[in-house]
Each structure stands twice: as C-alpha cells, then as structure tokens.
Length: 437
Ligand SMILES: Nc1nc2c(ncn2[C@@H]2O[C@H](COP(=O)(O)OP(=O)(O)OP(=O)(O)O)[C@@H](O)[C@H]2O)c(=O)[nH]1
Ligand SMILES: [Mg+2]
Image (cartoon, rainbow, N blue to C red):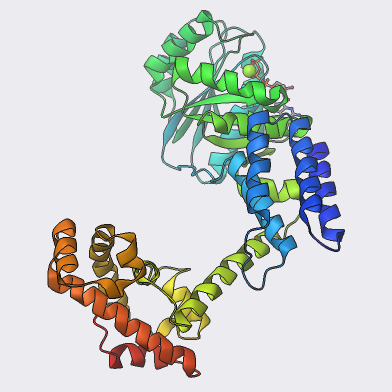
C-alpha cells in the first residue's frame, strides 16, 4: 500500500532512531526528508510546509519527564501526520438507509456498491444493490454478478434508459435495510451527469450521497470533491485504489482539506478490500511503528505526573486548581492524578458528582477574574470579590467558598507532599480539611 511513501518516511525515522544525539541539524534533516516523502506522495505543498513548521516549532520544547527527546519527536510526527490525514475515525451508522454512489468513469462505484453491501450485511443488515447505470451496457451484468458473489439482493432493468423511473419501481419492489444505488459515470462532472444524479436524488431521497474518488488522482481529488459537493451536496467520500498508487496520501489529505468526510478506503479489487478509514491506524502503518501509540500514552501519563508533582509541591494557582477540580471524575485529569498516587477510587462518587456541578459555576467566576487575580489569589479583597460576583452572576459567598477551597487544597497539598501517603489518606484528608464538595 503506497509503499514508496511509507518506505521513505520509515527510512527517515530509522535514521533518527539510530542517531546518538538529537540536535537541531538532525531534526532539520528529518523534517526535510519527511517533507520530501510527503511531496512525492502528492501531498499539497502548503500542508507539507505547515507540517514541517509545526514539528520545527515543537521539537525542542520542554519534554515531559520520563520521555526521551526521540520519543517526543516521534510523537510529534505521529500527531501532525494524523492531523493532516483526517484526525478522527468516522462513525458508521447502522440504521436502515438508502445510499447513492456517484463519481466519474471507472472510479470504482460498482465494485464499491458490492463492498458496502458486504460490509453492512456482515453487521447483520439486509442489503440490496440497484443498478441505476443506464448508460454503460455491461453495467447490469457486472453488478448482478457482484451481488451474487456477496449474496445480496439485486435490482436492475435491462434496457431502461430513465434512471428516475427505474428507482421508483425499485423502491416498491425491494425489501431491505440498506439500499445501495450504483449510478453511471462520466468523463467529467458535466451538466448531463449533474442532471442525472439530481433526478435520481429527487426520487430516491438518499440518506447518504457518497462520492467515489480514485486515489491515483492524488491532490486533484480536492477539485473533484469540491465540484461534486457544490453540485450535489455530497455527504461522504470513499477513496478507492489506495493499493495501486503512490499518491494515496495526496488524495486523502486533499479530500480531508475540503471538509469531506472520508468514510472508507478500498485497497484492492475484491469485495473484501475495503476498510473504515481510520487516520490513526493509517498513520501507524505509514510510519511503520505499531508501538507509536504506546509512546503517545506514555507522554500523556508523563503529563499527568507533572501535574501531580505540581499539586504535591502545592505549586498551583487558581487556573490549575480549576483545571484539576473541573476535571474530577474525568479520565486523565484529577482522578488520573489521584490514580497515580494510588488513591484513584478512594474519592467518593457523590463528591465527584457534586464537584462537576460546582465547577460549572467556578468557570464563570474564573472568566470574570483578571490574570493577576487568577495567578495570585492573595490579592483578592472585598471590592474585587464584589466585582467578580457581579460579572459572573454568582454570589460573594460562593466566591469566598472557591477561594477557601483553593487555600485549603493548597495547604493540604503541602501535607501531601511532605508525608508519604497511604491508600485512602487522600479522601480522609479531603474530609478532615473541611473541603466542601
Ligand atoms: N487495484 C484496485 N482496483 C480497483 C479498486 N476498486 C476498483 N478497482 C478496479 O477499477 C475498475 C473500475 O471499477 P468499477 O467499480 O467498475 O468502477 P465504476 O466507477 O463503476 O466505473 P464506471 O461504471 O465505468 O463509471 C475495475 O477494474 C475494478 O476492479 C481498488 O481499490 N484497487
Ligand atoms: Mg460502474
């Protein structure tokens, strides 16, 4: 699968893995090599430049304890690549639906119709494919055979020239959860194609209008996606032939840059060669490092440890305090820190629930404070408290309560930092300290 791009990126990363000392020239060279690899994969120049700049900016920033510089840089590359490749995995709805496939000649619509049918069938849904390609003579047989192969219903009318009339009859006849309609292709998105799809659209009323784009057109996918979107209000994109080109990265980044949601990619000619497009998994394959996620997890954990240390040293301002308290109960925040201290599940659930409510109000209060007040809450006196209460729509008592909690937590944190905590001590301390949650 677009091996040449992957090989080049892996080559660059191997060099850094072998390097004894990571300094600016080493990183600059790495960035250059990856940029070159992306450009050869037909990724847009502006995107590639931005990718390079982001890595350059962050490569020598302070790293979390426990991380090495190499790991930090690998993590950056993984994150930045994921950002340009689509960031999030799409959600595939399993509700009954009607799908219309469209695209230019030979993009892979008909084969993809059978792949989608197979995919949804595997999820337990009854599927049917409809041949609405009334232009190409062999289209009927092609889809009929594919439907047989994946064992789903097929509907078509040989000789019918009006796709809209065909759809009306098809909808009456077919009993299925998912109806997938294959349409005819054209050389270009011309008036004829737009009119035809618009007429199918008006009778079918599809839930999804999917554009099928072949990866081998590289970043030209952007123009195609834009044009189809303008004319036909495309809901999703499927990028086909990822196996057959070095330009796959270019096509994916280009589609994503238009705001199109890439749902699936196809990687071969059989009905099985399709998968949900998962940018993270894709980048892992690209960089050839299955353990990259472990590094990212490690970085997250190191970030938490840093926060925990800050708390133990009682070195935090109102911003940090709010961040911790607002996050109570959420993974990766206060409970995560408590977990690292071995106190994770010792904070009572009611306490957590109440805290979530309270922190909403605290957010308003903090928004009404000046930077100085947040960084140095000791400056807070009567007139400031009054102003903040007014600005945030809360009462002076509530603001005093926030300040009191902050000071108590700070005091408690000092104790925490000084003594070796045993499991359960945290909850006891919270209660003993009179912290109202
Ligand atoms: N290597 C590779 N070939 C593919 C892939 N998807 C489709 N093809 C091939 O591309 C060719 C065109 O596929 P079709 O599904 O017929 O494309 P279409 O969009 O229906 O074409 P028209 O109906 O003529 O517009 C066929 O030979 C497919 O086998 C893929 O993911 N990888
Ligand atoms: Mg076709």
